Image (tube, rainbow, N blue to C red; front, side):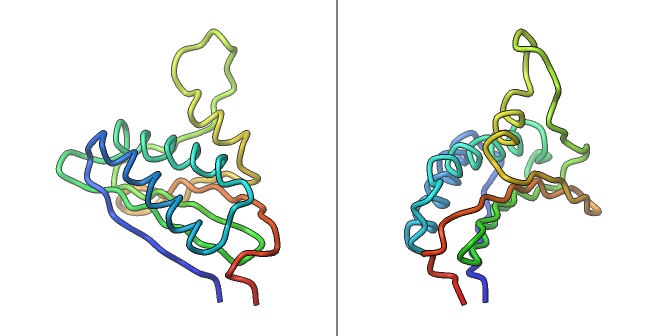
Length: 134
């Protein structure tokens, strides 16, 4: 059975650091050390996008972590519109670098739409020593 943990955060810039800390504490508690820095950066990027673009005023976003021992999946769900895409832009372009970076660091990237909102997710291949094996 995969290990799963989630938490909701308000639309507030301070929520980015809180989401990042929640992810690191959860993954560390599960014994996941492999790719922890990549995951931390990506949680920051996805949470920042949720705060800046995805969460309507007065709403929250949800960070969900799933660990099956071989893969860690991070999901950020909000009730905002739009469908984020990893941009194909030149180095001089402004904006969009967060998803470009997240897409490069993660092994899989996707967006699942809901009514309302969407979930932006990334999957990371991790070592087989995680607590979620079996």
